[in-house]
Image (cartoon, rainbow, N blue to C red; front, top):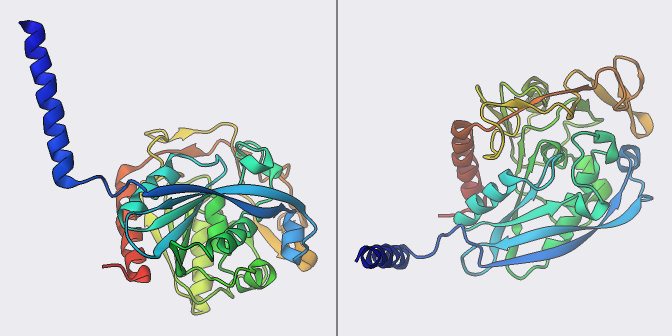
Length: 328
């Protein structure tokens, strides 16, 4: 009798779940279709990238395309991961954007290069490679039958946030973007702003929206504030949103709470790096070429999840993209 009662309860519970699903329909976070696309890129030194030299090593990377529910050609956001690779935050943002009817293309800049992470050894991949990867991804997306090539935005996180920020430079577009497309908006999350590039206030006439935390001691938001001030003085459409209690990777629900030290991770928070002639990146303090063995490079930044900052960022990003993509 007891087993029969338990069985009845289970059946009733399952029936209610099915009825609820039938009433509400499947979650809009579910992709209609997921595709994996190869992207032909190069592995370059930063100097080769800055000089426009296409002499790097050919490499095939991969992007995951999630086609959101909806008809016709969809808007899309390219998502570029950070130094730890494709993490939970990229998955969260993919689902969040899919729910809005926006397709996503999450680039994996590591696996094709034989890497899993670079946080503990940032020298294992020059930082500007991700910008070239992003431009090459545009070439893949340009002719996809479900993607609207006039409605593509770019989001990036940490190292990927740095790429998302500086992918807006006119100079880099002229050197490397052969797709014929431009992003409608640039959305960097907690990017590294410690490097000053030549002509870095000459950006495309598109919105740049930076998100970061006051408590970030990996990529200090103060450096991004200084860059934003220079961009605004040059008349550029740029804004920085600062969350007072948020640390680095504040939008990753699997990160520590409260934030915890990542003892092996390298940070250039105390470095000041500047581009000079011939694509040379100089440590301003030593006036010598910058390397990750320089004294200014430290380890042990804090990483941590902040649900309040994450929710606020979701609202802000959603509002921006709905406007840029002309969504109802």
